[in-house]
Image (tube, rainbow, N blue to C red; front, side):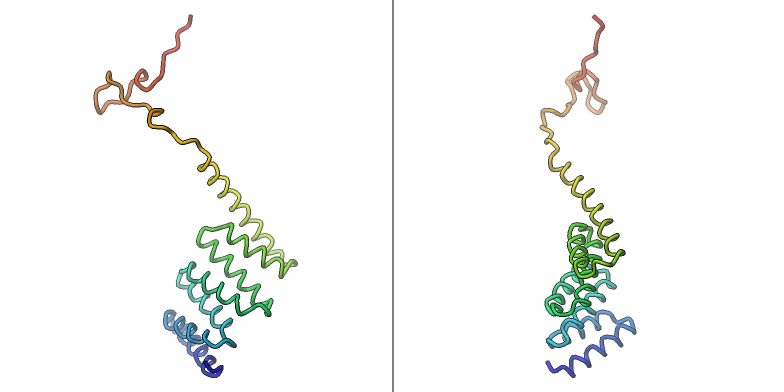
Length: 172
């Protein structure tokens, strides 16, 4: 695709977005991304539209595709890392969000806001991991370990302490 046509598509996408026609704008941006000279801008813009449409999974895929075209543009790469982190936070994947925030911090170590966001995200990730590990490592409960209704208890009645496996303690 010629660069002039890609510029036209980008302009159309901006106009459509301003009118609220986000799906049509996204289609124009996809077409504009076919021009290598405009791919990074078009994909970045499309990812932002996907986020506005509350489609973080699609947005993340689009931002990752845009990264392939921004290797020599640290400012755009930094913005994409931040967008990817936001997508993964929206998806409830704090470890993935933390990964992209760490990459962003390598490009902008002076950004305190990124560092705070990273620390918050890692804290959430660690808590999530702890809960997951606890669930994984809990010993399974075998069927025979569960209290069952005893023969002394009528159906539909609560189990007696005897049939639930409890023994009354007696003072000897």
